Image (tube, rainbow, N blue to C red):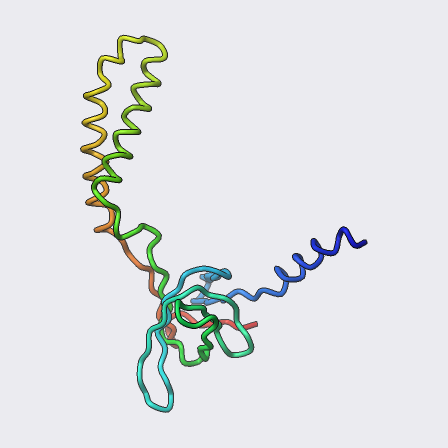
Length: 164
């Protein structure tokens, strides 16, 4: 029995985690523990709008627990939340050099695969590496421009937080 105790504790820990569920008509989205979120909420007393970015931890009664860089677990009242935004997973700071190296590597892999059948293709290594480096660098410059964060307005006609 003792050898199964860590497994049972882990199952209990996972089972006890509560996800954040939002619904709109027939659609629903579930935010898992550890997911990065940007929360916009209002303070009822001062009528001020605040924005907090961090990792979602749990839902405790009527509070959303989110850990930020400064605070381990910040409590945000669920009724005060006006918008939940999920940031893009594409990093904003891909350098041209990293993209060039990745593109050159992909070009070399392609020429290696082609040279498996006919070693004469190895003559094209410099050309494939340069073209791959150029395309990789160009892609690293263009792709972050299309980063989009998905936002969900928490209002009566839009998304609603469901706390079961």
